[in-house]
Structures are given as structure tokens and as C-alpha cells.
Length: 261
Image (cartoon, rainbow, N blue to C red; front, side, top):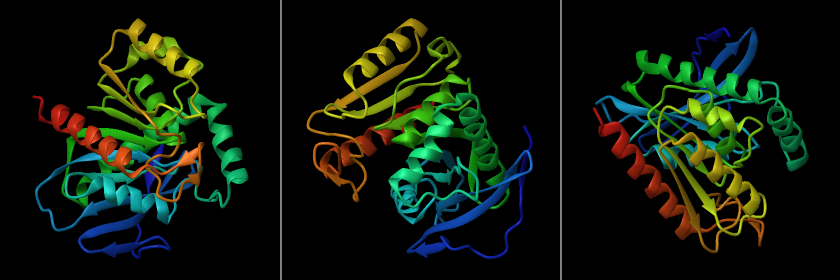
């Protein structure tokens, strides 16, 4: 796999700054194919911070996912939002998103490769932003949560992995033996997109691998509980209280693993 960064002089269509939070596009290539992710950080912080790769939901790189990344970043982390589809693919509706996400869910090797490439792009940002590249983790939402779990199963040498209302299934459960760091799954107990059988299979997978893992099941929450735009009652629905608890759980995990020697 060859990952190349492409210099960019001007912020693109998603480039914006609100207060001290900067969001700017980062073009890169994987084996000659064009991709464009987003770098998100608080530019008022000058001390090196840990970095997180963020894999967005199935709609991919857009302004809504950038806002979620800015919320997650705060003044604690530098976040690089991965482009999992390629610059030419920007889904505008559920049908297009389902097609794009389905192609990667059907090819977990490619999913892992693109997530791994995002890690390398994040590391390269050390030259432009105050980033401590010895403290890196990954987070993902919905489709992105499942992608982050595949990144963990690939053996990526990060400090922690967090899935928010993500898919838990994998065609290669034995690969959990490759996991190198704690895994935290933040799950809606009433999520119809992630049925109990999938949850049970994930628990069995983690137990068999004997890794450091947690699964927090939030009562009353369904899919997309961190997404303020989710408004399909009983299926995809924002739950602000659960969202706040889930983000706090994420912060708690990273405070622990990033403080470890």
C-alpha cells in the first residue's frame, strides 16, 4: 500500500473555522487513487496532543461529520477524519451511502487498508499541527464504528479503539487475537441495526481472544444516538443524554490509555 500526501494551499469546500476549532481538508492518495479527509483541531492549544483517526458514518466526509469531529476533538485531541470511499464518492442520500458502505463491508481487507492509510495520514500531520504521534487512537460512528473494529482486528498499533453505535459483525472473528489495545463499544440497547445475536457474537469473539474490551449498552437508545440529525423514532434517533455519556466514556478510556507509560 502506498499512501501519499498532496500539498494543499487553500481550504476546500468544507474548510471552516469556528472559534478556535479548525477544520481543513487533507488530500492524499492510496495506490494512486485520490482521497480527501479532514483535519480537526483547536489551534489555541500549542502543546502536543494525542491524535485520533475518526471514521464517519456511511455518509462519509461532509460538514455534519466535521461538526461531530469538532465536538469530539475539543481541546483534547487532533482528529483526522478518514475518507473511506475516495474523493469522487460523496454520498448524498441513504441509497448512495448504502452502496458505498456495502462495497467496503463486503471487502473487509479493503476496509482495513483504507483505515490503516488514514492512520499514516494522521501521523504525517505532526509537521503542521501540535500532535503527539506516540499517543494515537481511533473512533468511529455507525458504519465507521464497524470500520474501527476492523482496524483493531488488523493489529493496528494504536492505544485504543472506540465504536459508537457501530456494527459488531466480522467475517473473521479469529482476527480478534491481533488486537493490540483496549476496545470500547458504545451500543444502544434497543438498536435494531445491531441485533442481540450480533452483540452476543461480538462478546464471544472478545472472550475467545482474551483481550481488553468493554461493551456499554445504553437503555432506551437506538441507532445513531450521537447524531443530532437522526430522527426516525425507534430506529435512528438522537439521544442527547446517552450521547453525552458515551462521549464521556470515550474521554475516560483515552485519558487512561494515553496516560499509561
